[in-house]
Length: 326
Image: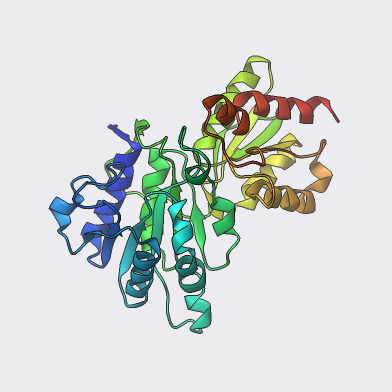
């Protein structure tokens, strides 16, 4: 099987769907002439032309609104934010228009739109360009929220997102665009709302998603050296959350650690903790532990970034806490 970059998998998903469906188009800052800020849309202008690959002004609220209007009138826009930090400028259109249109119209208007782009930290970009908003968007009814951890999943999930009749927030990572892995050339899709068990285990369940899944997998490898068997689950989507896969794993391992990049208050890990304690309390042999970012704006200095973000050391410690500190 051929090996391609994460950005290429995203490009293939968009291009395949644009060839399949003439109502699909891409718009955003630098997506056309510049081939995308991260070269995700490289070559798409040449193939599809300026009516379907559209450069926008630096005006997120404006072009998000154009996308919502297009979606309610029969098109399927893909709106790229150069970073989801900039989506805050457009959040009124995302939350108050896209997410609510179906309900407020009494079911008359679907909004089949995808808002996609990079999320969370990406090196020394400091506080205003390093925020993880997955839990913010997942809090809003009417939206679906996807956070893939690898190129294979990204392609299959993005194709499903484009075909979905509801608005989908599709969140990537600048630090993953160059990641390489095997991705089939043939057609495939991955349904939204289905988690993936990346590694089977018996002693503890580790749940994560997005680029921080790499931390979870690395921690599991370190634990394996000490004879600790960790089951690692990639949520893939954080709205809807595949609670069944998580709960079934906890019923087997009896311990749970959740690793995510968001701040701790009202995080995805908070929600999973509540649900597992509600539905599988009798199976837990230890309190659930979370590994999140520090409750501070992300610093600029690399040493402080390392101290702020979830890492292997903190994850291994959390697992040992649930194993040995009952």
